[in-house]
Amino acid sequence: MAAIWPGSRVPNFGIGDRLSFYDTATSTPQVVYADGALSVAHDQPILADARGMFPVIYLSPAPGSYRQKLTDANGVLIFDDDDIDVPQSADYEPPDPGVTDPTLLVTTGMRIGYYGTAAPTGWVRCNGRSLGSASSGATERANADAQALFLHLWTADATLAVSGGRGASAAGDWAANKTIALPDYRDRIAIGLGAMGNADINLIPDATVDGGETNTTLGATVGTAAQTLTAAQIPAHQHNAGTLLMPNHGHPAKISARNDSGPVQTTYGGMGLIGLGTASYPAYTGAIGDTAGQQIGGSGTAGITGATADSTGGGASHPNVQPSLFELVIIKL
Image 1 (tube, helix red, strand yellow):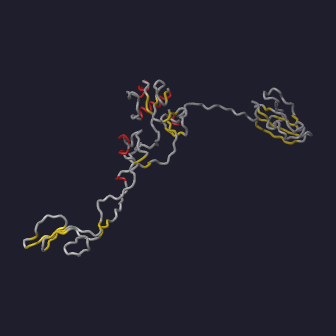
Image 2 (cartoon, one colour; image 1 turned 60 degrees about the horizontal axis):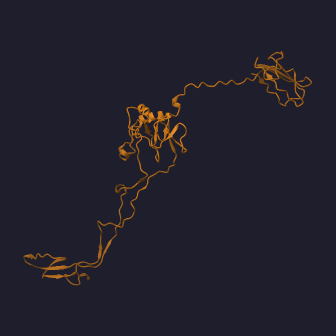
Image 3 (cartoon, helix red, strand yellow; image 1 turned 90 degrees about the vertical axis):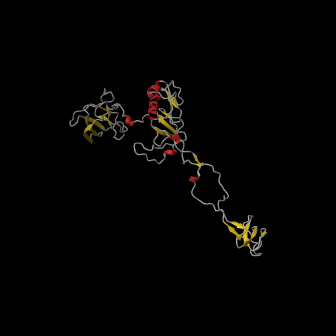
């Protein structure tokens, strides 16, 4: 392929300057051309026009190098350069497509977040709907391209529902046009399995996992959006019940006579006293000691035990959700 001499159409020369081309290290003229097909040779020396420009000059790729000589209109040498390479066209050879290493690709079953509401081509939403063949009646994706993910989910997670129940194999259920439920990430975030080839770290106890599953079960769920505290979960604390003021008061009293054989055993209400004679007195709230043997009591304070103070609070659940942002969760077909 012909190459254009770099000085073509460049107005950097003097009017009438003379340009000649030679084979490298010789005075043998080298043919240069006026067309890209290399069919019309330029007469040499080639003269610069009234604007100081040379016409388009095409160089042959063979022999691949040249000597150039420039003089002014009077024959005074301006430059004489030798052993200049002819610019070569770039050869492009498409790379061999070969076989792509599958480890470099996004593979079936990979799950990612996607900022949109519809899954891009080659992906489906993890919304708990079903997946199956074109004849399966699946609700999320019913197409032949769903086979790889159907087989993967059937094998990886035995808890995912298969229409009509699981058969002997994933391939058999696919051929029978059954559907399988997709993982359901609606309003959920992902948590790493408790073990993943290591010892169970048990940061999330199995007792808190839904449905009696464990933290090492693929697809198990845990957590609630709201939580009501039990009494055992409330921090230890006390309520001050206050002090009960007791005004002056009295108690009914009966005085029993006593002799050498001891007090008379008499049953009565109120306060019982032993004295020289027998008498009954009503409750009396005068000052202590106003009448001997009658006043029992007076003002004072008393503690309160086993009482319920004024309660507050409604017992409702409280939000249990971390700050989050909703996006689409998709899985590769």
